[in-house]
Image (cartoon, rainbow, N blue to C red):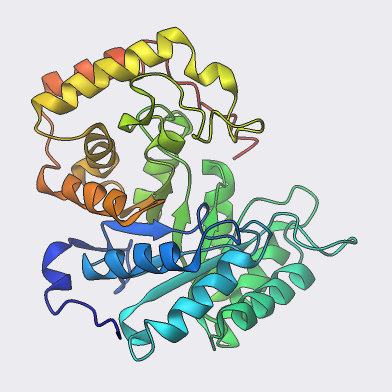
Amino acid sequence: MNWKPSDQRYSNMIYNYCGKSGLKLPAISLGLWHNFGYDVSHERKQAICRRAFDLGITHFDLANNYGPPPGSAEKSFGRILKEDFAGYRDQLLISSKAGYDMWPGPYGEWGSRKYLIASCDQSLKRMGLDYVDIFYSHRFDPNTPLEETMMALDHIVRSGRALYAGISSYNSDRTRRAVAIMKELGTPCLIHQPSYSMLNRWVEDDGLLDTLEEEGVGSIVFSPLAQGMLTDKYLGGVPETSRAGKDKPSFRPDFLNDQNLENIRALNEIAKKRGQSLAQMAIAWVLKKGRVTSALIGASKPEQVEDCIGALDNLNFSENELKEIDQYAKDGAINIWAQSAELE
């Protein structure tokens, strides 16, 4: 049976202008960092994307190295585009990135012109697209002149491979420099994608959020749920099937020590008082006061997407709520993802 998206899909979502541009992003976007490699069935990936689009999520975020193996998420999404979203391309925002290790040899990572343009071409081929809506420099390259990286993004836009250019995980100072270069080239930097959550506030300490507001650049934050810590997944301990319970977790095991788990449970009680799940409160928190354009979520099943969308029902926080959250998420020394800006 052929699937058709809901006629009411846009009524479920808030859409925000991205910086000083005419482009609107959904307040919640779907990232394909996890659960879209060859280790997950096509049917599950398909169900997640279908439900997301039905709920008004128009933006799907990828990168060349998403998998496993690298490249497989883009291939998987390309199949979904062909089978489910054919005829809806102009209703979708699709983004990809390049910066991390992708192929052997000296030209397969970082920020050179050669790597970025070749990677963009490969991403388009994997997804079966003529263009992506946004193409990012995934990380700052300390060994390539910033001018070269930004000129590559400018070329990618001018050549029609992408409609807009963005950067990811650049600190405040480097962001200002990148924005200035792009402005001079005539291709504005549309958007920045940093990590940000109640437990990871480096963008506040670094001044990045202030910089983005001053420069008129939009923001889409990844890991607003702190890689699952700000969900109900760990309230009863660490399940063996979770990312943290595996032999090679993507974050340090000590993130889930007894004190941190106790603080997470306290945050969950605050969420209950607000009539929200912990995940909903965490998403609402990064979107508060309109400083963030979109929160980028991941999902392993459609129901998680549905839960996250529920965050939009209550984006307001009282001063007392914010202070109480800080007591457990900041002042309580659970700010465990406070990464050095040199690594961002």
